[in-house]
Each structure stands twice: as C-alpha cells, then as structure tokens.
Length: 409
Image 1 (cartoon, helix red, strand yellow):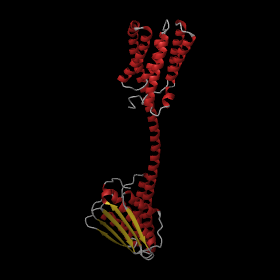
Image 2 (tube, one colour):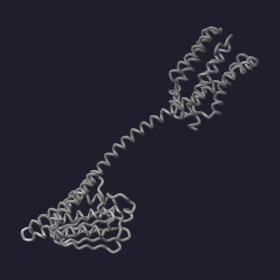
Image 3 (spheres, one colour):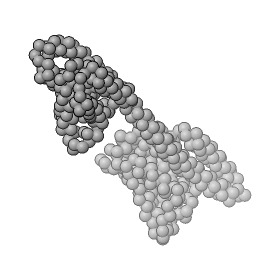
Image 4 (cartoon, helix red, strand yellow):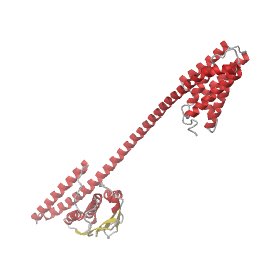
C-alpha cells in the first residue's frame, strides 16, 4: 500500500523550474480573470485567495503531509483539499462573463499527481477526479450544452498533459535513482578501498610474522648446531685432527643449509624443507643433527604414519626443530625422547628431555611461534617443566582440520 500511494517517490516539492511554472500559471489565471471577467472586488479577492492557497498547497505539500503520522492518509487528504479548492475557484470564475484561462489551473495539479509512483490506473483515476470536479463546476455555472462543448475541447488536453507529466516524472525518477546508485557505489568503493588497505596491512603483518618465525626456526637451529659443533671440533683438534676435520665438514654443510633457508625465507619463497619427506625422514634428520652434539635421541614413531598433510608436516617439523634447538641451548640434557602418535582424529607429537628444567616458563619467540603455528591448524601446544624434571613439549593437531588446509603456516 505504501508503494501504491507513492511512498517511494520523487521530491515532494517542485524544483526551481517547477516553481517558476507554478507561479506563471497563477499569474496568468489571475491576470486573465482580472482583465476579462466582471467580478466585483470581493469575488475577485476570494478567487485570488483560493488560487494562491492552491498553489501553496502544491509547493509546500511536504510540510502538509508531515503533519500526518500516516503519509498515505496525508496524501489522500491533500488530494481532496486540492480538488475542493480547484472546484470552488473554477465555479467562481465560471459565474462571470469570461472564464479566462481558468482551465490552466489544473495543469500543476496533474503534474503533482504524476510525481508519485502510482499505478497507471490510479493515476488515471486521480486525474479523472480532478477533471470531473472541473466539469462539475462548469456544469453548475454554465449549463449542460456549454459543458458538453468544454468537455470535447479539454479532454484531449488533460489526456496529453497526464501522459506527458507521467513520462517526465518517470525520467526524473530514473535520474534520481541513478544518482543515488552512483552515490552508493562511490561509498561502497571507499569502504572497499579502506578494507583493501586494512587487509594489506594485516597481510603484511602476517607475512612479517611468518618470515620471523621461519628465520628464527631455521637460522637459530643451524647456528646453535654450528656453534656447538665448532666448540667440539676445537676441543679435539690438537689430539684428533681427523675427527676435527670431519666436524668442520659437518659445520660447513649445516652452514650452507642454514644459509639456503634464510635466503629463501627473506625472499618469501623458501622451499619447504619437508617437501616430499615422510615424518620418519625429517624427524630422523633432526635427531641425527642433535646426536652429533653428544645428546642421545630416542625416536619413536607409530607404525602407519607415513604421509601427513603438507601443512601438518610443516608444523611437526618446526615443533621438533625448535624443541631440539632449545634442548641443545638451554636444557643441559643428555637424553631426548621424540614421539609421534596418531589416532582417528588427532596427531600428537611429544619432545621430552631429562635436562635441568625450570621453575617458570618464559615465553620466548620460539615458543610463541610454536603456539601460533599450532593455532593456525586448529591445534594446541602445551609445555611442562619443573626444576630437575626436564622439559616437555606436547603438540596436538586435529587431522580432519589440517586435511582441509593446503598452505603451510
């Protein structure tokens, strides 16, 4: 009903051109009535008052309709008031000798009706009511014969004016809609640009964190191994030069591998160190590096764990790498136990040492990186330590979640 009565409509008052047209009609009607009709002063004053009031109602219809809580009711009342004012003014004019241009008075009212987005049948009905009131005023003042002639003369004009005003209103409405759509599109583009800037900032921050984790995990791991291997080589150099040379060769190999990983991480194009490898293969490689430092590594992998999703391979690899690096740097341990287990829903990796442990757990960058990696695949990591009880890292990741992810963190 709201749409039927024009609640979705054009502006309720005429713009500059419409106002000029309305004033022109009022002036023409009043001047022709003054020049050509034989009204007395009182009759002309009443006629002029009715015409001006009608024009004010048309121009300030938005104020009038704002007085009603239900705009549909305001529109109906406004239409009836306009019809009554128009019929009364027309009747007064037809009582004189010459009606002048009183027929023009209804043209702004036709435009006003067509401004609303009414169905065609309702527009025709409203204009017919306006035309009927005009002809009724003519009939009561001039008689049937002259009214019939006036009907034949004015009916085509009303039809043309209605069709023309309806077409203009439609074009104007489309123009307003296009302008509104353009404004909405511009606002959406501004929001999209803001979102793009924000997304770019988040992506950059995420990439910086990823590179920081990768550099810490890979470079820290290799530098720790190189440092300890170099110390061992220096210790045996005077007495066992052959063993020292072998250690130096291992140091060179680890330095090259570390440099490759760092270069790849900085470029953001680091080759995945576990690509094409099973958990058994890369855990064995990490265990061997730790064994070279004099630490006993006991590796236990459940049978049947041959291939993991790439994202889970990466998480387990980095967890093992960080855990073994911390063992060599801080634990003062001589034995480490690595264990990898899986059931239907969860993969669990555990690294436990017999080192000195700690009273409190300090969240360094490496441990923070482990938590972030686990969280990215829907898992969690737990740390347990106590003085003299060593240090334990337990990583739990859901298999169903990681199988749906294709990009390593």
